[in-house]
Length: 256
Image 1: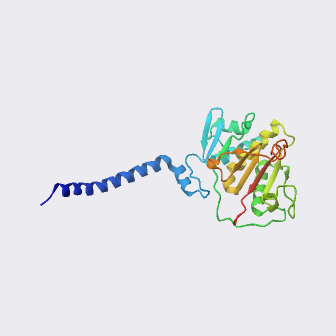
Image 2: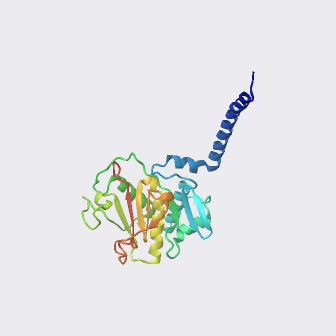
Image 3: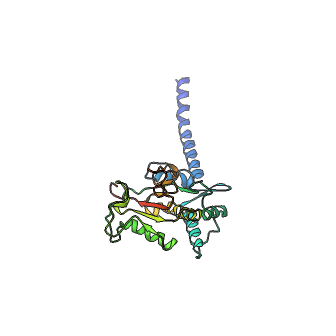
């Protein structure tokens, strides 16, 4: 004899497959709408979930999202144009983005471009090369030179350095480079930000860990690629505040 309770139980069992299919459909729809932003978030190795565009540029018309390839293309193009050289085609990039990257941040606004970081966990530890830089840092120096030409560099020397920086400084490991923009003027500030933005856009490919400039710093570990205020040990010292130079260092690899 079939009871009402048996009937209700049968109905519940018959509904379960339908609910399962409905849930799968909802998840599939979410993947379609969130797309690459969600997937890239799942593969990040620094603990933060990537959602939305990998990079953002603050323009006079509001924030504009870019994928990493677009950010690299835009920052490279404005750097080459500033040198009077031929630049790659940027016709697919918002003109307001290119203008902001070329002009630099207004007044004391800080960075115009931010990119989410992703630190590779399987990098080998490296020793100094003949230049006083690790091969990873040397690759960074060569990449900068290719785009920005000859620059005023410091923070390293053949055989390495052992003084002039904090005790924990990555300069002593040959992993850091200082790029100088002296004297401290608005024009040099603009040039410094042009480089700093390029470094952040290329951070993943070049295994960059930190960029410091103009009282701000970016870290591969920063949430959503946000720049943060840099607290210099001597607020009155423009060198320690990184007003006259951009500091960049690369990941150490191993346990570093």
